[in-house]
Length: 621
Image 1 (spheres, rainbow, N blue to C red):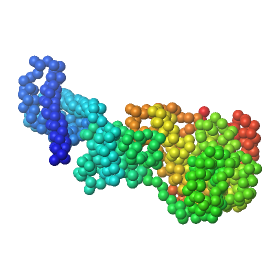
Image 2 (cartoon, rainbow, N blue to C red; image 1 turned 45 degrees about the horizontal axis):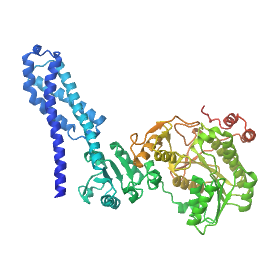
Image 3 (tube, rainbow, N blue to C red; image 1 turned 180 degrees about the vertical axis):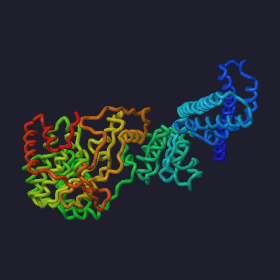
Image 4 (cartoon, one colour; image 1 turned 135 degrees about the vertical axis):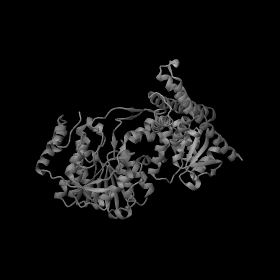
């Protein structure tokens, strides 16, 4: 009985609104028809011939029918005017002008004479009257929705009519402290449409989100689809974003219900969802057979990329895992994590700098690693712009010393982690990585070790990436700072990037620069907006976005491959090989020696020397 009453109430509201609009349009047509004559004669009623009045009056029923039929055809009685936009405005204009045109045709056919300007006045007046009614309704509807919510708690829509959605509804309904009220459920499964979960109706698929949000005065939308792919989540986020409702997804059921969800507890709100694609899957079991029973050394093993390398390597039974890092806190964290998860793992954690020649030589001589992953590097672009000498010392000569130690101690594979910023670099960090690639390719010619580099873009959630920064800014109440509204980046998650690095290592024959397919570029502004919504806030209303301008050395976009390198495919379509660039090796070594002297002497012309080595380097002032 209750459900029937709700259905009757819902239908009554819809019928009432449409009846109001139809009545208004009838009155509007009448007013526009007569006002068009009055405007033609500059409001001088006595000057209007009586036969013009008669023509308009006699034709009025036809004008009304034409207008109502056209308005129905253009869905002016079905659109959601609380969220009317450009599309609805276009429909109003087209329908109104067509109505005026058809009225003119029928007036002519019935031989009813009116002034020629009457048609134009009629069209424009009809547009104005229709826009006034529809968009005034939008503002009135929004105002009423806010007043209603203020007095009656938080209205919630659940997206997902599965077990997770059912549990959330149950907890919300039974919680004494909850101020939420579930009013609508959305699910893409047609078999669930029209059915009820704990008295709440499943209204339809995701295409009903915007309409239902307005109809039920929804304040918050909760995405309760733990099994959904990231593309699905991103699509739902984009649709829900049209409603300006707060948006949440499943972090932990009870925190969500009690309103305790904030940025610090967003762990279950994977930033991977913001990529808008399902995670890259690699058959690591077949690929990582080459690390089994091998001694593997990872430099920078405590960093975001290095630590993930250690995790994935540790899961495939290496003979020994050696972790090197200069920062003891990071090294300690990954050590404790792996000891807990892999108690039988033969692991050694060493505090060392890749810039220390004797230390690196001693480590390689003592432990004789079979495979080396070189992830140690200074990667923060603006900081390296202000300390270019340190970027060169650590990235270039740290790589040189580590690679030389590997070559002199018969390491089988040496895989260096590079970056898309090495392509046509505009900053010292990117240029330093390009020099590292050149060192690796040169070493490969003269030693038995297979030296390769793997180049990829930004990783979500890594140290220094935008995600941790955005989270801190959201937690502090904003603003969220974006350097430029048009800036784009290629993104991967850390596990995705590392799994492809490991696979590229298996493909390595020596001398290659592997380029990872990062998918479609992501607009940083969209990333910021989506993260704000996923954190349960409204963009601009709750958290403001502020543009700060490009940072030193920063580009609007990054490239993954230099023009002259060409492309070669591997068995994995996501991994490509760049053709090695020929360089004058003798000149290159002389330039490196000059660069080493310059940075050790803390000279100010280091950028000029970098430019000589990397001609594509164009530093931004």
